[in-house]
Image (tube, rainbow over all chains, first blue to last red; front, side, top):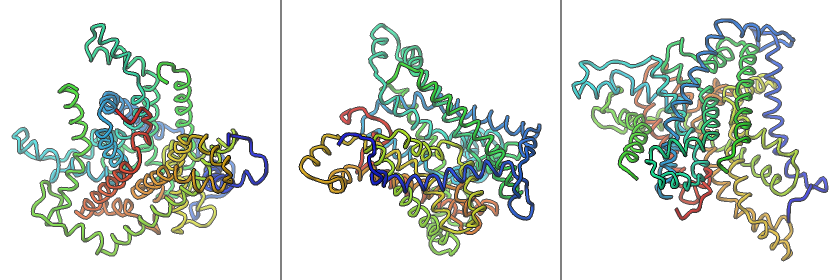
Length: 285
Length: 265
C-alpha cells in the first residue's frame, strides 16, 4: 500500500469533513475579518457593509504608531532574552539522561500550558507588597520595608519572559537534540575550553536555528495581551490589548479588524523569513 | 556535567517554579488575605471551588469546553492526517497549513476572526460556539502528533496485512489504529490541557454568556484578589502536570516533542 493519487470519489471521503470544518470555521471567519476591516462602524450593532480605508488610515496615526513601536520593541526584547537563556539551557537539557529529560519536559509543558491569566496573577503576587519578593529582601536585612514592584515595565517584561521561556525551549529542543556533538568534541580535542567550543563552534553552526527561534518567539510574544494589562500601566499596553479593547469595549469591530489584519501581515512576513532562513541553512539536518 | 551547568539548570528550575510556590502558599492561607508565607493552614479555598456556585459553574464550563473541543479537534486531525499519509495529493497540504495557522499567528487574530464570524452568523453567545472555536484553534496539536504517528508506521507492515487479504477498513482497525492510538491520546491530552487554560479565544467567542475558569479568574482580579484564585491556579498546574506525566508514562514524550535520537541515551 504505497502512496497513490486518489482514484475515485470514494477515496476523497475522509478529507471532506476536516476540509469543510477548516474552511467554514477558519478560512471563512478569517475572510470575514478581512472584509470587516473595510466596513463602517455601527455604534448600535456590529458594523455596516461598506468599503472604506478609514480604519487603516486611523491606525496610521502617531498614537497607534507608538503602541505598535512599543509592542514590537517589547517582543524583540522578550525574544532576545528568552533565546539567550534557552539556548544553553536546552543544550544542557538534551545532554541529560532520557528519564531526566522526561521529568523536565513534563514540568516545562505544565508551565507552558498555564493560562496567561494565571501567570499574570502569580507574578502580581510575587511583585506585591504583601506576598512579594521584597519580603524576602526585608527578612535578609537588605531592604527596610516591603514595596510593590508593579505596575512597571520590569514586571511586564519578567512575566512575558516567563510565559515565553517554555515555548522557546520547546522550539529549540528538536534541533538541539539532533545536534551532532562530534564538532564540539573535535574542538575540545584540539584544546578549546568547553566554553570556547560552545561559543565558537556550536553557536555558529546553529546560527539558522537561533534566528528562526528569535522570530518564532517574537511572534509568540507579540500575541501577549493580558500580562501588560495586569502588570503594566496603560502606557505598556500592546497591540493585542488594543485590538481586544476596540472589539469588545468600544464595539468598533472594523477598526479592531484593521489592526488585526496589520498584525497578521507582520506575523506572516516574519514567519516567511523564518522559512527562508531555514531553507538556506546547511549545518544541521 | 560540571558544577556551573547544574547551577544554571537549578536557577532556571527555580525561576519556573517560583510563581507556583507562591501561588500554592497563598492558597493555603487561613484568612481571606494574600500573604506569603501563609498564615495558618486551610484547604477551605480548594473546597470553595466546588461549593461556591459561581466557581463551580466556571469549573464545569471549562471541563465541558475542554472535553468537547478535544474531541472535535481529534475528529478533524485524524482523518486529515490519515488522508495525507495514505494518498499522494500535494494540494491537500493546504488543509494542513490551515490547521497549523491558528496556532502560529498571535491568538488575538483567531479570536477576532471567531468574534466577527459568530456575530455575523447570529450565533454569538451560544455555548457550542466556544467548542467549535477551541476545536479549530487547537487542531494543530493533534494534527502534529497524529502526523508524527503516521510517519512512524512502517508501510511494509500495511503491505503485509493487505497481502494477507485484509481490506482497507480492516487494516485501519487492526493495524493502523492501535499504532496511532498513543499519538491520538497525547493529541487529546494537549488540547484538553491547553483549552482548560485558554482565555482570549474563549472570551471573544462566548465570554459574556459562558464564564470559564480563566475568564472567571480575570474578572475576579478586577474586584481584588481572593485565595480561591490561587487555589484554582494551583489546581490547574497540578492537573496539567498529572496529564503530561501520564502521556509520558504511556508514550515517548521526547519523541513527541521532536527528539528523534535513540531512546537508549
